[in-house]
Length: 236
Image (cartoon, rainbow, N blue to C red; front, side):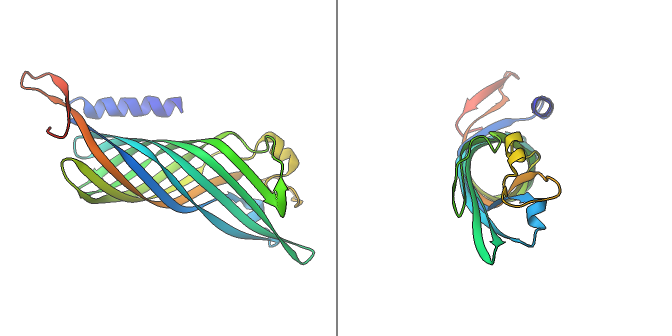
């Protein structure tokens, strides 16, 4: 993560050295398919996947550099769910995992007219988690408190003015590390009741559609004297 931050700062300084930099703040809501991928469970005929859905919402700071480049810093509260049914003795038992996270994003954006693509890392901090397998399961450290994900998305401008912009997009996220902790691995989570020949990692993922309403707060631009200064508002 330190390398990503260092690289992002260097890219920001490079692009902003001779360009106008302007800032927006706003709110964002995202809804879509949520869940996790586990190779053992996915390929087990005894399990039937039922991908969940969830809502994420929060705030965003947009740092726009000239017309082509920018960075998004976002903080979203997200709800995640993964269900699958396990067939045992001709009975179907539902394994249901629910977890809530604080998701922090640092995304680079490249704009082309009114469209953009975005990519970067996401850090997820676990706020709460619950699991049931027919009945509720008592969890005590079987899942990691945080994980990193790779993010890719694209979208465009719906409408806007010098005061605000309304943007929409589609975003894909996939966790790079294992959601299950060392204790959880020893216990066979997330499907502790099934016996597999080898352990496979659990990777949370998300695919969602979002809306973002942003308001211009100011810009760093050259004044008449040639020096760069911050100008509040949208009149820049």
